[in-house]
Length: 338
Image (cartoon, rainbow, N blue to C red; front, top):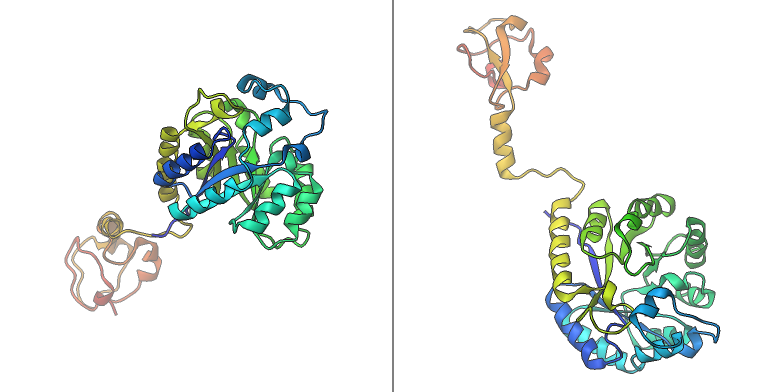
């Protein structure tokens, strides 16, 4: 039986700590555990941050840089290093995906790589120059919706897809690092599906795998989750990320849920069909019936197995004529009737 396969993105983001060898090692390790894509981030910090920018509290804890620009530079790879990442992803047969945070980086991605998706980060949901650029291209879109109201999401979707024809996956996301279980609110993912009609998924910032597994069971077609080689490293995202081992367990669990979810059609195994014959009931004689007898209600009852005429057709059987003698306590079959 064919099953729908959840698209799993391992979000490296800045967790390579600005080192190409770590980024390449992560691609190698993640490709071995069965992820569909490895995702990075790219930015020209001077174009993404003004001098008034500041770090949220979780970044102050995870990184000792004084300013967001300083922090971003520390954990960025040079643009051309992404060519090596893209090549390695091709070699390892996983998709390369990258979120851009300003137009220089978005143009670079478009000019150099054939990515399967544009990924719009939650913070860029109203960055209209980027939305306009992405809307003008024929490429599927992943839109994260952390920090956004339903009305704000509607505005962004109208920007991206005025004619409602694009392939868009809308990700429920809670932009906390980590997101607490009581804040994950997976029912909001279902509401995104109801309100907007696009495919939905989860950008999972919670600790553990339960949220992602539950999201797949609820109908998520895509899961994105942060991953690191070492949670103790300095950096903004390491502590809220999964280890490679934890991510491997997540992939196994999601693939099992994919199998369990199956398809919408009712499909029966040979074993189930065999049990059906044994467990269903048929119309059975209450006493010996002779050729020429007319069947009355008192002549029949309902007993296993289900190899004869179903009890659901009892009213159609009343009044029919016996063609062959049938012994007591035997299944009535169509060939025994006129």
